[in-house]
Length: 210
Ligand SMILES: [Zn+2]
Ligand SMILES: [Zn+2]
Image 1 (cartoon, rainbow, N blue to C red):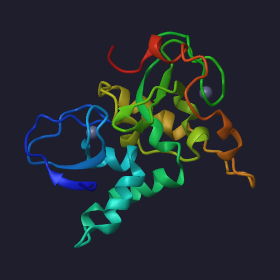
Image 2 (tube, helix red, strand yellow):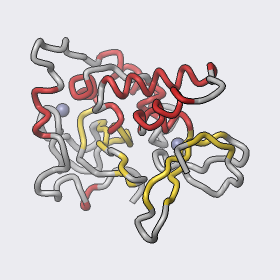
Image 3 (cartoon, rainbow, N blue to C red):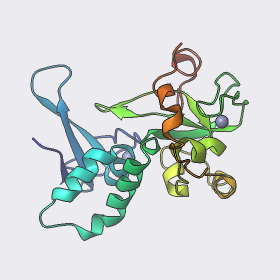
Image 4 (cartoon, rainbow, N blue to C red):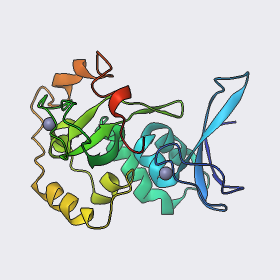
């Protein structure tokens, strides 16, 4: 079955990106993929917002082919287009305070101090959330080349309401460097991928709930 948007038949499935339940009757993005355990296909489910942000390419491809066209999905298609133009944006996952001063920022390479705001790099492939380490919240603009919305940053975390104002002012102060002629994003692309030693940011210090 091809990728599709459908109504959730039950409230049992969890979104692969935010891990929250998708309510019964709510629209969801069902992404088809080879079944890793058996022959045939399986589906991975996402809230539409989460699909647009974290699986932008397949989501945008589907939106472009919907008949009749869905004008109401335009804001989500725009979010997917943004995440396609700035290809690192889709990796931004859990936003949280660093639980320890163990990981270095994947952008500026400086240590992320304990309790500093950090964003986990969590690209999603085949329904699996990756663990590529962390960047400072302030480094998001430099890393992705764009300033994400507050909603985008908060969506994959369960932060208390008080944190909103703090994240909002960090966002206001965030610097997005002008792309250079050579392409600011392209210059460090050889670093893309999981942390080489896999220990600093991998198993020992996973984002979110342990
Ligand atoms: Zn979700
Ligand atoms: Zn940094």
